Length: 78
Image 1 (cartoon, helix red, strand yellow):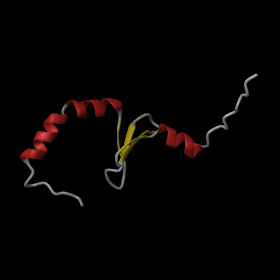
Image 2 (tube, helix red, strand yellow; image 1 turned 45 degrees about the vertical axis):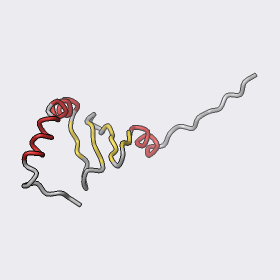
Image 3 (tube, one colour; image 1 turned 120 degrees about the vertical axis):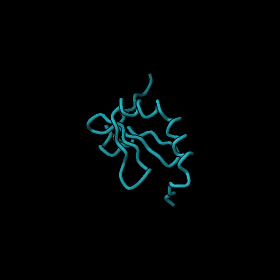
Image 4 (cartoon, one colour; image 1 turned 45 degrees about the horizontal axis):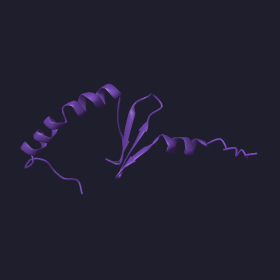
């Protein structure tokens, strides 16, 4: 006869933690409105809806080129 262990229901902070995916110092979370929030870039999260992230990621090479081409004008936050 096998023993059944009952998992306690997750509390709100545990649910939120379970929704996050961690990559380096960045973490991702699905917002209450169904958008993707990225934490760790600055003081506030960057939150975009799925279609906005897809559009941005589709031009990632253009963003990299733009940053490279404008390197002398851009500041680095330390």
